[in-house]
Every structure is written in structure tokens, then in C-alpha cells.
Amino acid sequence: MYAWQVVFSAPKQGNDPWEWEDGAAAAPEDRETGRGPRFALADGATEGFGSTRWAMRLVEGFVAPDVELTRRSLLGWAVRAQDGWRHDPVLSRASGVELFKLDSVGSFATFLGCELTGLAGERPRWRAVAVGDTVLFHVRGNRLVGQFPPMRADDFGVNPAGVPTVPAALPGVVDRMEFAEGDVEPGDLLYLATDALAQWMVREDDDGLWSLLAGLDHPHRFRELADDRRETREMTNDDVTLMRISVAASWPDQLVVCV
Image (cartoon, rainbow, N blue to C red; front, side, top):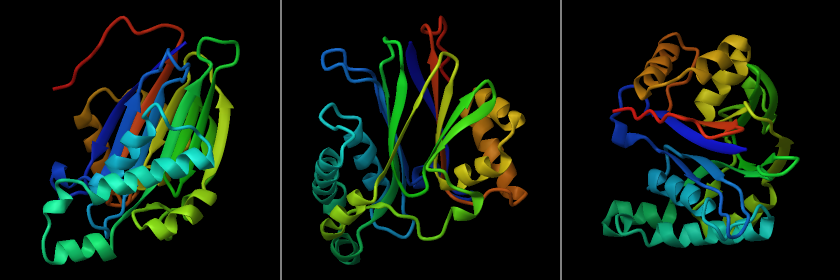
């Protein structure tokens, strides 16, 4: 089997695209090591400093070949991300109040990372790790068959846990990371969604929702969807990101590029 992803995003309503503070990354399978494809999503804290760059450090580091889904390996991943964030050439050019925020405030981000394993074998699976309220939805035949973490709509937005830039707080966060896994079949879709979007998806769970998300074919359609739901107050006005991962028995015979 094969897997590929597409990412849709929209900043807060009224903000410019460059003010988007989430992060998304993916990496193909590594045939030399036998590791399956990796996918990651992070939601940087609005009240933090350098949140966008922190979210991107986390997701890009997770899809690197030297990270395993164990607490020990994930601690090393987060430590390296912290070091890279603190020495980021863009952040290091800050001055005055910004440098104070870099040292004393920092940032944090909710995070979800997923790996597909055994795609060439008899029992392909997804394995995931999560901190906070970025959520994975596993859909088969327009029906939700799994959600991780298993949150209710009322569980979102109340001081979510996150991966911090403060070194002293990191071991406790890694100890509280959650893990899950499940079987996948050809035709399955996995969705990774940041909190405002994930909360709406939990509320709207039905065949129509999954058909709508499976049919998204252009970034503009996703932004229109987010804006419409914000206008009706069905969705909180926050940065939103959706990664749709398709699992299939063969590669698609066409590639569509949106411009």
C-alpha cells in the first residue's frame, strides 16, 4: 500500500497568511531503514514568542529519520528542537523586549505525530503520539472508526498541554505524552487537525462531514469552509490546519497542483 498527504490551512479571520502559527510536515518511507512515512502537525501558542518557528521546529524534527516513537527518543527530539529554536537565526536577531520574551516567555505548541508501518505487509498500521488537542481522525467509508486523542467537544480550549521551549518543563511533558495505534486498509483516510477545526469535526461527525473533507480539492475551498463556519460561530476564530492522508493500494495516476 501507499500513502500521501495534502495540507490545508487558514490563518485567523482578519489575519494575513504569514501570521499563521501552526506547523505541518511529512516525510516519505525510508526503504533503507524500513521506516514508514511520517506526518506531523503542531499548533503554536498565540500568546507565545516565536510560536510559528517553534511549531515548525517540532514537526520538521519529528519526521527526521532518527526519531522513534518511544519516550526516550521523543525526549531527544524535543531537546534538539529547543536548541534549534533558541539558536534560530531569525529569532536571534531580536532585540530589547523580544530578547526578554525569548528567554523568559518562550512558547509551546500542541503536537501530533503519526507514522504508517507495514504498508507492504499483511497488517499495515498507524502509530501516533500526541500532546494537547491536535487530533487524528481515522475514517473508513465515510465513517469515523478512530479518534486520537479521544476528546469530546467540551474538552478543547481549556489550557491544553503542549511541548514547551523551556527546558526544565520538558521531561514532565514527555512523561504525559499519549500513544495510540490502529489498523489501516486501502481507501482509508487519516485527518490531522488543529484544535479549532478538530473541535468542529468532533461536533459534526457524520457521513456528510467526511464526504465534504474528502472532496476538498483546493486551498480556497478550505479557507471558504473555515470562514463560513466562523461566521456562523460553529468554529472558533483561530488558525486552522488540516492534513489529509490517503491510504491506497496503488499510487494515483494523476497529480493535481493548485496555484
